[in-house]
Length: 380
View 1 (cartoon, rainbow, N blue to C red):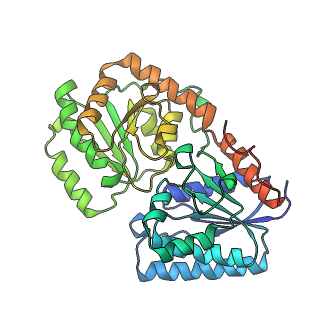
View 2: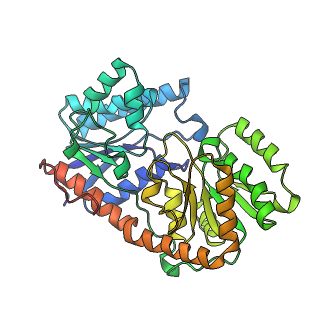
């Protein structure tokens, strides 16, 4: 199926973050199925510039908006794919793509990569709500990540045009078969942007309690610091730990190093309460590695981690329970292995790239054919 053209908006890595990885996977999903042209909206300056109002971001927005208009006129795509933001300033930037596509009567597919949009819509100004309804109301399809955010577009887009498509990734451990239980039972891994809302400070606060319970712990934190304030707070928390249990901060890692860390850890801990969190890729990678997961009852994470089956879910900010669950997994090797196997099995059943690509292409083909909504793209 290569009828018509899809114009895909979105950043590509680097820097590696949820949005750049998501764009890359969407484009790969269309390969050999749907014709695609990509408008790359990357900001190569790094993660700290994302979502901020400065001259550089204004310039990039105008540049990308101009390129979009040129592609819209020159290439005449039938469908425009836009991942949408969950805050007013980035959404206004999105309107540089959404409004021209609407006015030129292109079929628009929007993709929500987080769980905050419904709250953003309800809490924003009357004018902003009008802009959102005008920009999104006629979208051909709206993709969300899970059933608990299925109503994110209530009052904006008809429910029958909403598609539930969880994230999926290529299996980095497919050549190794089912991942074996790591040989380092005391190694705790955190892998994400190092920011308070992602739970990095909560994990650091939990480690002294865990050390009291089970003795020395090896912890590794991989990722880029988002702010100097978080870095300074983390340094104060690290100083409270015994020398033998002080964590190792390895900075941003490339894919090879990332999978080495996953292969040599006992558990993946991600106590996020990030407002814009969706269906985190890092959890999928940890599941593919056969790791038990400790995370939070937040966004679409309960769709990935079943409490007591392939990990534990805690309330955001519950430091005591977080430390207790770390101690439980360190102390019980049988449970670690059982939960790790459950993670791997769940990943293979629900969250592979092949499953994701099939669902995404169903939405693209539907839009290109200008057909009515179907139910075939929704997971069972």
